[in-house]
Length: 152
Image (cartoon, helix red, strand yellow):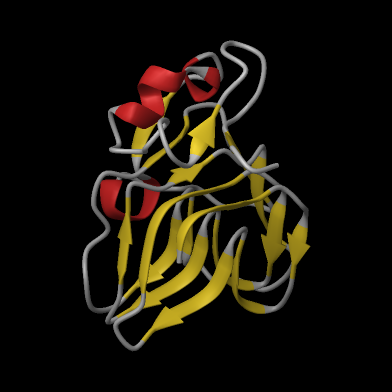
């Protein structure tokens, strides 16, 4: 999956992500973001619920919140809920994303990405630093909205 995004709210039980629930078997997710509320009971992340033997590269978690709906599971992250094989690279997340349902995000940058501010999330330079192509695929209304695909 390359050059994609999702903005809708997502809710589920296990391996819930704002863009994709379970990434496995050498799948590559690159230059993507999720911006909707994400909620679930087990293994929940802003972009992906679980990453297993796959890669998540140059992605952004722009979700207002990640929430545990029930249970005591602790696998929640701003970008990824749970990571098995493979390491995400060059990921970012909103520094003001809320952790709801009595969860904390912890300190792992692999699961949480690097901090960006809400203002930075609406700046072309933020995504160009991640390697996004604003000549061929992306455009942005600078300071107003998140990136969108040029063909929209």
